[in-house]
Amino acid sequence: MSELASYIRNVPDFPKKGIVFRDITTLLKEPGAVKKVVSTFYEKYCDAKIDKIVGVESRGFILGSALAFKLGIGFIPIRKKGKLPAETVREEYSLEYGTDTIEIHKDALQPGERVLIHDDLLATGGTMSAACKLIERAGGKVAGVCFLVELNFLKGRDRLKNYDVFSLIQYDHE
Amino acid sequence: MSELASYIRNVPDFPKKGIVFRDITTLLKEPGAVKKVVSTFYEKYCDAKIDKIVGVESRGFILGSALAFKLGIGFIPIRKKGKLPAETVREEYSLEYGTDTIEIHKDALQPGERVLIHDDLLATGGTMSAACKLIERAGGKVAGVCFLVELNFLKGRDRLKNYDVFSLIQYDHE
Image (cartoon, rainbow over all chains, first blue to last red; front, top):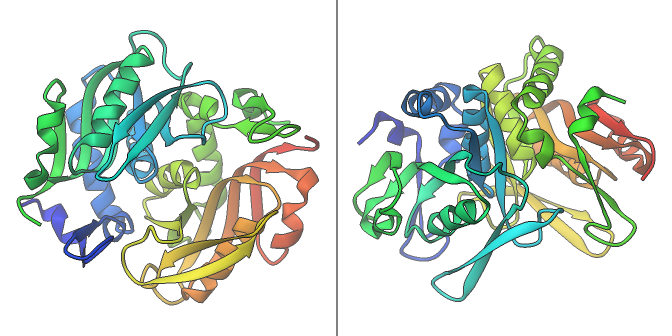
């Protein structure tokens, strides 16, 4: 287990009974921990010819933006339906109950641009799998996907087999 | 008008007819523009003894996080109701129709910490006014509030008279 894990707060029974929520806000307020996170991502991706960082709304915006800044490349948001003002590409995906939809601006990417997608946490992989499809439909190439936290026991990685998946903190059980 | 304004996309009739939406995503994907924004904020605040950057969900997370990283200080999110997992302080505020509620973790700040609050856009000032009250109720001191874009004609600054308000791009009319 990474030393970074000590900055994560475990909140029992959120958002519902039996779930231990891994709260990253306690890490985000510690600049030394954020620096370590961003530097580790930077080392992995600085030579990977990444053109853009895409962050998934909304916690994915936080470290995604800091990483884009550190890499000196642009940042693009993937948002929930109806939030982006210009023309979008959409991807619907299944949740435990019902569906959700994410969007990216249709002109956000140049054809063939290499994209690193960031979200704070990999659980079942449903959102990130949809995000990867969205990038490809918007003309980009998914050069990698990265997370601060990965919940191994939910096997999200299995849904992202075609992609290079990287995470900094892993949990083997609830 | 700032040269930065050329990176903002004007989207007519979003989110409803007659409104010109100032879309910052076209700026965020240009690293030179983001660097200019973050450097300008940095110059203003680097000697202001800021302890924490607070970003308002969700667009305020993007540049708020990059600025916190550049300043080498911690980042704290203010979120919509029900999103933060641990114990929170809440502030309700009025919208054109109805109300909205924002939250911060109760233990996010140490007593007396000096906070710079960031959001992408100052319109009527309702959200930022509520954010300032929230910081004060959570034990912090609002050392400043900063925006990428300010819609002067909506006079949001009038609602923030007790605070140091700074914005990089201003619009005098719709």
